[in-house]
Length: 164
Image 1: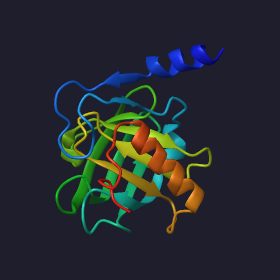
Image 2: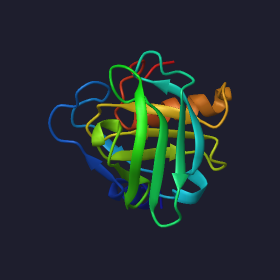
Image 3: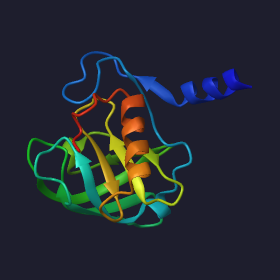
Image 4: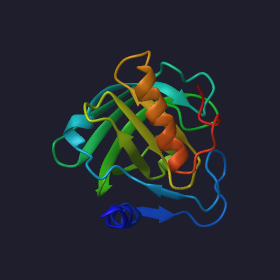
């Protein structure tokens, strides 16, 4: 039974070949949230942790259209410094795999984890160029913050690189 669960988890994961610039270990496996609900994810989020200095507390709005896409606004915390976030992002795969047309370096954004009440979410990219913890409210409850950091570590993110 345990190996069946491990096999099911492995089926949701994909290794990232080659170097992972920045925040993730090269060749580390990464998986997205299999029970992701786009409608529940919609709304305003605050950046709790990010690899971008100056982004703590920045706001992002993910307005869902009910047909598989989000209108994005707020602050993009995926680069070396905060930038304006404006554009559209389409749910392109199972488990919270989202492709933006602007922001996030136009890289696929994966929702790696979201708690069952959609209070805290962990986002990242298979390339490892960015990872972040989003929360509906700050400060993040300590147990949820610890769980988010564990998810980052599980997905190959280097401890301390995403921020605190």
